[in-house]
Structures are given as structure tokens and as C-alpha cells.
Image 1: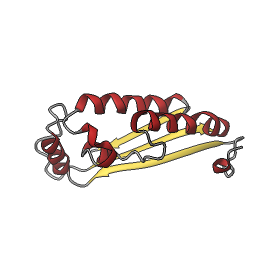
Image 2: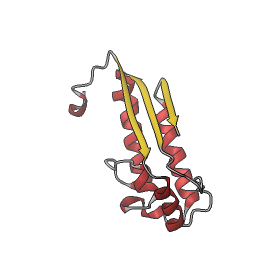
Image 3: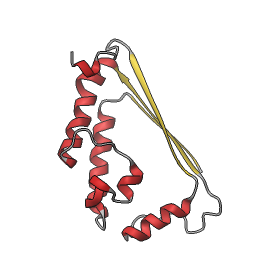
Image 4: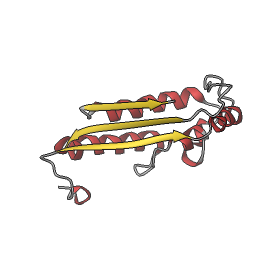
Length: 133
């Protein structure tokens, strides 16, 4: 077993939950304007709109260590030549650091995001998504 996975019980299910949200929709409009992304269209009249999303993945232990983690590392290396890069959507949207290649290139961003999602969904049993607006 790979030493990085020694604390993962391969005979049980693992649930991963993460949240994402914005306090200010205007920030998203600013990102759109900075990057000139014509297909990124937040509400032009936010008026104190808050967004909150909760995402969960349920993965069996053996699938996690043998398939999921290696698959995510492969997609990270394939797209960014860095298997340890951290996917932060805010950095991707603002084209920061390793994601600078997305500046003024929404089609590349969309293509890469689709590959990432397919890679993640392929090995999870449950893909849960809740959103509040």
C-alpha cells in the first residue's frame, strides 16, 4: 500500500463534503469583466444575493486508493504538469498562477473543467450537490 494512503480504511465507505459560497455576486461580475468572458453571465442585479453550494462524494475505500486518487493526480498532471496542484475555482476563474492560461480563453477553461468533473464523478458512487441562492 502507498504510504500516503495508510490511514484510509479500504474496506469502508468514505464521504467527502465541501462547501462553496460567495458573499458578493459583484465579485463574480468583476472577474467576468477582468477576463472578458462573454459566456460567464452572473445576475446583473444581485441586490444582496448570496450563493451557497454543498457538494459531497461517496467513495468506497479500495476505489479511493486504487482508482480515484490516481485518476485525479493523472488529470492534474495532464492539464497542469503538476500532480499536486489544488483546484480552487476562484483561482481558475480569475486565471491566477497555474491557471493563467485561462485568461481570455473560456473554451479552454470549460474543456478542462469538464475533464476534471468527469475524472471525479467516474469513481464516486454518489455525487451530491445542493445550492442555495
